[in-house]
Amino acid sequence: MRIIDVHGHWGEWPFHLEVGGVALNLELMDRYGIELQIVSAAEAVVYDAVAGNAKLAEVLMEQPRLYGYAVVNANRLERSAEDLRDCLSTGRFVGAKIHTTYPGVGIGSPLMAEAFDLLNELEVPLLIHTWGKDVALLPELLEERPGLEVIAGHAGGDAWREAAKAAVQCDRLYLEHCRTVTDAGRIAYARSIGVPMEQFLFGTDSTLIDPCISLGVIRDAGFTEAELVQVLSSNAERLFKGFRGNG
Image 1 (cartoon, rainbow, N blue to C red):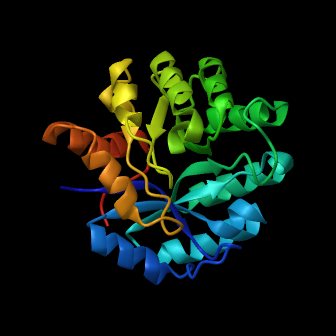
Image 2 (cartoon, one colour):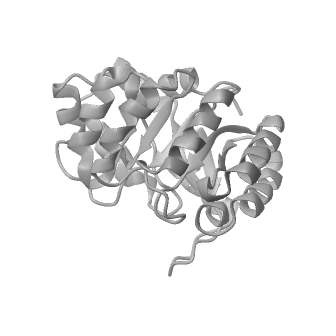
C-alpha cells in the first residue's frame, strides 16, 4: 500500500538528537515503506525561515522522493511572501508551513490572519503546528478565506477533541495525528463525531519521531483497506496542487 508522509522534517535540530542528514530521512522511509515525504527545514522552523528554505531547496533538487514546505514567518511576512513565491516556482515545494511556538505567533494573532490572507491569495495548502485549544479558531479563519486548505499538524496535540470538532465545521481543515503521546481513541473520537474520511492525512514528524509511532496509531484506528488508502495516500494526492505523486 502506498504511503505518503505529509509531515516530515529535514536538517539538524537544536536538541540532543543525532538527526539531520537526508540519509536518515530516506533510511526511515525505506524501513517503513514510505514512498514520498513532504518536509520542512528544521533551520527554517526554529531560526531563519528564508535561509532554511534555501538550503532545503538544494536538497529537494537531488531527492525526488522528498517535496517541500516553505516555512512562513508571520513576523516577517513581506520577506516570507517573496520567499514563498520563489520556493513555489521551483516546482519542488508544494505547500507552506507555519509553526506557532518558535516565532511566538498564535492562531488568534492579527499577524496570523495576515499570513492566512497571503496563503489564500496563492491557494497554497498550509501545514500549521497546532497544540492547544486555539485550534478551534481555524474554521472561522478558513470561512473567510475560501482559497485556503489547512492541515492541523498534530491534530491539536492535547486539544485533539477541539481539533476534531473544528474539522467537522470546515471541510478544508485536515487532521494529521502525529505526536509522541499516543492518546488512545483520538481517531475513533474524530470519526464518531463525523469527521469525513477525506479529511484524515498521515504524518510522522520524522526525523524527530520514528515513523513507527504514527503508523501504529493509523493501523490501530480500525480503518478498512479502502479507508487506509485514503488516509495513507489518496487524500494527500488530491490536496496538494503541483504534487505529482511519483518519485
